Image 1: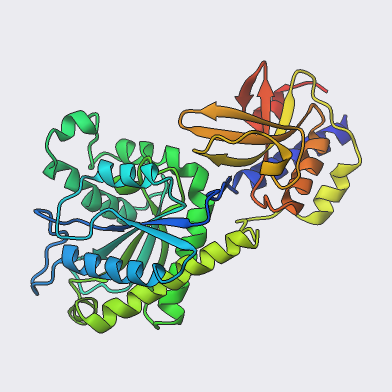
Image 2: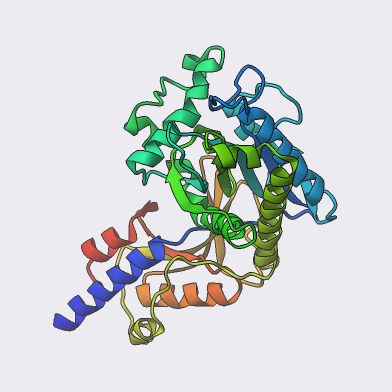
Length: 372
């Protein structure tokens, strides 16, 4: 009984750890890596108000066009813009453009603002982990909804001031959060390392512009246009070129990492703990464990040639996403070994999932409630 309890505790710890990682999105089967570049605001929405006359919508557009111009020189990339001129694009249509393009990345560019002389860069990924400051950013960015016609109909009563609303819109993007963080880290590292600018870090906030985008997505606050010095830098051609090049380099590095199948796990289980479990069967009756290796909007046949030689594959459609699984067993330790095998094939963010009576349940629930 003591031994069984120890295995369950260790298993629960491993489950928590692996739950911190995310799905590896399937890369486009076509030759081009599709990047959707989104210049924030536009048209009758100028963006953050400033006293110095700088307009966020203009600065964001100039930076985006420079990023796109550079990426389009690379034959491996295809660039799609949500806007290339000073026009107003609704938040829901920005996501729609990205999804229709079946994009590999969605990158939204903005400028920050504050009543003080705050300065520095921030890159946001979608999520519910909001500090008071992050909630303020989310509220400010999301209030553009009120500039749209029939916004009550299109946003189903969404209230930018409501924490419940901002938390709710983050859920669908959670499957891509690790890859989004990976890109965000590269962007912020380039800002601080190459440009020697102050990085305020990577943040999570519930931002409508990334809502319902089925790919890794980031929103980059390139600096504070309300700061006297940083505002002038953002409004200059030199500053815009430097920022664009830093973002371009981050995108290229992100793609290179994907091509090399190099994962970016937030936290890895210790090898010693895995080895302690791997040779001891841990059977849970009425539970089926599988290894989720990917999630994508693309519908692929669960065949070995589509998944780097792995066999015993299955898939399930959940909403607009297809989830792809490797293996099927009631032995939790065998499932962990299958997960390690999937990682050696390049699915570095794969993780174990559990099913009972044909329905997916939390692995922690399966390990606690099932008898073995």
